[in-house]
Image (tube, rainbow, N blue to C red; front, top):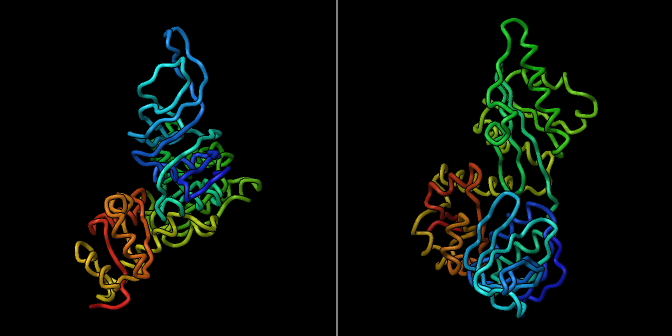
Length: 328
């Protein structure tokens, strides 16, 4: 995302959306009550045609989709010859818009993070005998290709003799997909992934990294990420960073040490005992004062999203947890 102009004291920013990942950041920045202005199409008062105009509206509904962010609200300012009422902005890559809001620390940090973020797309192919699963991992989340691409079956079965038809089909799927990604991680148990690797071209191999896992499927993908497969190809991955934070908390829980979760975390924050406060994105939105208090007491706040395994595990702990400086 490009920040064309900004002034936090005035609660103002003019932004240009550069890629789909920017939309993922914006969904956590734009809130109800914020005012946005951009060029859009709106019906004229005579009802006969639409014209291109700048509108300013107050956001009431924010709907995140894979390739756009829909912001609906009441028009506050517009041209004299257009219908007033409610309107929807479709924010997409290439779109420029202005926003007025009271930025929280977390929202301002997200805005700066989006500005410095480099978009990435990593294809994971997890293989075992007769089966292969494909996923695309981006900053905005994980896509299961076996479900979103009808040309990619979830299970691929080898023939009865050599299995060559299976390896060829896996290679063909990779060939169709690899041009649209930055890297390919080949994973799975045993040597099946190596047999797939041997069928790839030298050009494709420039994007390939290998990773052992004990299983395939979503569990295998989570295992590959936990073992650092994403870190091998992406310097600053949100999913890797959030997974590492949750793993530190879980390790402290297993050791019976400096960790807590649930409602007692609130009191521990007030006592200054919290070194790192972990909140799911939903819990953070519900408890902005708790996050602010943790920072005032010298603690870190880690917002963990539930679009991957680590976030789901934190959600199972109530969406609120803490790594402690000391155990009261």
